[in-house]
Length: 169
Image (cartoon, rainbow, N blue to C red):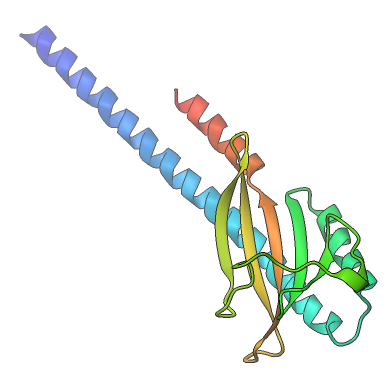
């Protein structure tokens, strides 16, 4: 009877420890994702403020250079694009643009309500991208003049979370 009681208590303690570890892992995952989202949103907001000034008459080549330089500084940024309010892409970190033939954003990529938007999508092979759409505002309360779009690599975050999962096991 004593052995059964000790075994049962030991098992219950083990189950409780496993539940505590799972809660901590979930909390850590959520806090890492929040931090990654905040970092990406901050970078997009900073670029949107810089682009507000650039919209005042800077050449598109300069906009493209600013965007490519930003991406080069942060290895987690996969791509960045700047588009005007009509959806014409004015700068793209992945390619040089032909001023005479500017591409346009796909349907639904330009936020209709002028608000920032964040989403996570699969990149293929289990990789994920955090995408941030940040409006470029004319002034503090003005209408959107365009949008900055960031693709942020969640691979390093996923690797850290996978390491936490392996430690748990």
